[in-house]
Image 1 (cartoon, rainbow, N blue to C red):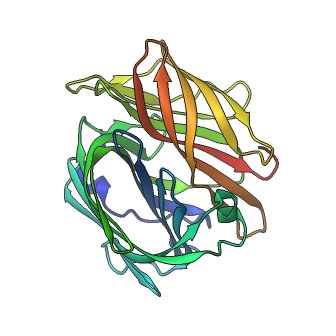
Image 2 (image 1 turned 180 degrees about the vertical axis):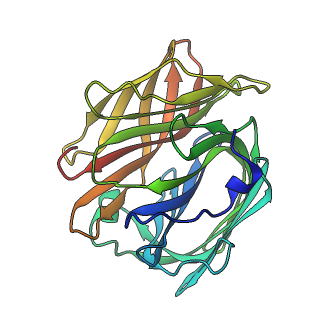
Length: 302
């Protein structure tokens, strides 16, 4: 199991693409509101990547994306840049984190513009959110990474409106080499209405047997999944449209409710995109839920 000290920052190796990242995602129980935050530190490149994306039913996609933010000073996780203040705070290791944001987001009527010019109306966006553990962290086999199912509560501020959230989510923390442009993968995290939480990941590489993940049954506990597979249907732009997932003995129909994709450019000129989306999940036994799925798409693949 990860130690309490692992929640903080780690010493970088020499790899130029050595990265340490903290992810936080959330979804309302009815799917009306969802979002995610990622802070990625690239000390050998001298920059931080910061993302904050919000999806709402019938509303524009809101994005804050800064791939040239300064590295946080000292051991804290606070960013200050033009039009951006963000902070991640570990209140209790493996139990409780808070996420704060005060920024100007761009509102996009067409999610495809998030991969293009990213021009839209400027909108104030703020987070005052808390992630509290539902189960112990799941330690990825053979990797310096762990994930944790959480409840999420607090306020999302959009313009002059405040949205109170009592929902679900997941957080993860990883450190090491991160070459987004090497191969694709599918990652998913969601909660069903009965309280069951699922997480699974697999590289989109033929013949892979690496399929980490967990299930948190209603009431708690942590069970390792025996396998994960996904069949995805893409639209004309190569973005996911729907999918069928098999997580252990459970099968799910996955419907995209809102796209929130991220363009990815490597220092050596390689390109790609992270096709992240708020999704609705329907199990074969009729249970439904909400969460997030991502498809990493290097330039050579949809």
